[in-house]
Image (tube, rainbow, N blue to C red; front, side):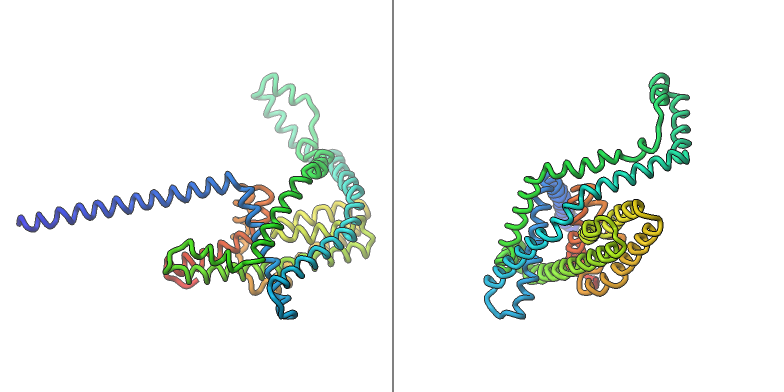
Amino acid sequence: MNDATTHSAPAKRTTRASLGWRTATIAGVVLAIALCLFLIIYASSGFLLLFAGILFAVFLDALTRALGYVLPIGRGLRLTIVCIVTSLAAIGFVTSVGVTAVAQTPDLIRTLEREIRGIEQMLQEYNVVTLVTEEITDGNEEGGGEEANDSGSRPSGISDWLPDPSGLFGQVRAAFATTFGVIGNIGVILIIGVFLAAQPQLYRDGAVKLVSVESRPRFGEVMDEVGVTLRFWLMGQFVTMGIIGLVVYAALAVVGMPGAILLGLTAGVLNFIPVLGPILAGIPIVLVAMSQDWWVVGYALAVYCVVQFLEGNVLTPLIQGKAVSLPPAVIMASLVIMGLLFGFVGIILATPFAAVMMVLVKRLYIEDVLGDTA
């Protein structure tokens, strides 16, 4: 009996010690995750610039690899050729299409402002908003006292519900005041991208050495898969953006739509953002069409629907077939979360970030931790 008691006491102490160690480990992991999230949010601009630089490096790496099938020369020379050709293409695009788009911008902004004013006046004439505002005013007068009377005495209309067009597009004009900041960020992205693309294996091996020795082969495989996923997604996205931009421009130019080049360019660029991008691109197209004629509005809506059908059912499945498949709910969740944490720039980078996280979750958690098949 005494021997059993003697043996059970160390067993209890060992169990309590292991339980305390597991509790401390879990608490430490939670604290580390919370600290990492705090640092990421606090230094969000730096992390976003780094991730954007990685995307640009993936872009340069894809072009360098593709050039290798044509010119069997050293990687450094191929990367130099890619950088020169890309720079010349960007300069040519800016000096041709870009200059025309910038020249059309003031007229397009005035057209959009005029159409928004027209919508506001039309809604006021039909008392669409007046009935709602009267109910709100009556409710304020019943329980608000003098302040409610003061606010209720002021006539209200659609301007209380929509932003002022001059202020709305004034923000667009004010964005040019931050040109130097934008240029500086672009410079950082370009430098990071070129450095990473010059020696991708060096940085890849350096990241692999951050994990334990037995986990390095598996972690290296996952990193390679992440790189392949980003490469196919990014190149496919650029091809899709180019096709969408050209189709929208050609379709609008046929009917003489004002600012067709700028609208096509906007549609192509905003297509980088899934779900929200096409909606944002369709709004100015419809507003500009309203300045022409009603049949032009119907034509613009038809073009928008055809382009979105083409993008969602033909281009994306065909071009993005080798990239990671992201469910719509995951895309929407990533847009919301990244938008809340990092603003509009987070929305732009939400989809590639979600693609990376999808690969990591499948390989490192579902397969390695849970032992299941992703």
